[in-house]
Length: 469
Image (tube, rainbow, N blue to C red):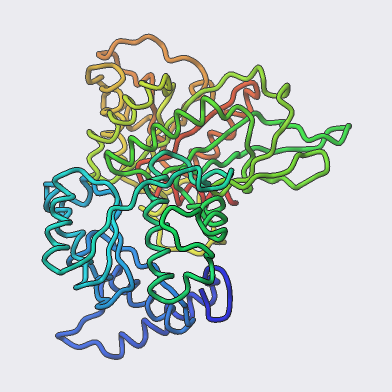
């Protein structure tokens, strides 16, 4: 936060561009044969530190990129405190193929005698963390998951049981920072280890939100009727966004999605919807980036819900692990996808743009071979065999969108050997996909379409950007 202010530091687009180009030009002026311009992530790390210094932040939370040991963020010699979240099989092409290797890299952020916290880990990861901590004389503690009773009757704003683990680590790190900087007494009147959380902690835990992590966005158009009440004239299209891209996070995503679609019904409207507060709407409740309004239950009682998957991921993320984990975890909770849509991310084909930049519906010259391989994998999971699809059919399907009824009609009973993908489709662009979903829902307002967007933070970010327009 800025000196003398309370809250997080917000950087406007203009201010960000000012710092970006100033940093860029300073680096360019000092380029030599032995000191070239840094790659993107290193440049962004330098830029972040420059912004923090210029804006005089009181505290900066630095998250590693891939792993700690050789990460460009790991240049801070004496941090106040270090934290290691739940470790899994991620970035294996860089960090190694075993959990031991990954844990070794992550523990690279430990600094001699600087306190560190972690969460309960698998034994092979925990032993590595403890060994490195012992080597550097680091006082390493395992933070317990947050006890929900400590929220004084409120709820954790972030959805999913795994967020209790993350919250427990956040509490330990924050308390350690406050104690080591002499600020603990300012927020807490109690020194006991088992004491209630400070009110500031409770406010933060009950209101914090992460865009693209267990986030729900209602994409519906509400118009006032003759009685002044708001009604939906175009059906319901709901996006459930989570940037899960590892086996562990995908399982957590599936559990979250299954739980909310079974209990969501008509409980929420997104702050991204074109709605306004009116006196005939009940009080809003902020939960992880969306605003919930309690609407008339009779309006939606007879709607039929369809669960749709909107998916893309990088090849290094191992979709042959992610997709089966997603399907099996959802199925164990009684949630089944009626259709799956595979699309390229906008960011795959576009340069970095501002929030107001125009995004075309279709992007020419794209290679959809990866999306077709994802689709084939999906159909193999659903059917238990690899369906046959001729190249001519693949080419044709990228040029002609599926009919709207494809979204909400039950899949025909075709055998795996037939030339059809009954449970999935490849759509050539994400903007086109969003438009097609909206058109399909408008065609059949009796359907509630619940779209899980996952597999890639790039995909989730692009969807959020499109929904804001």
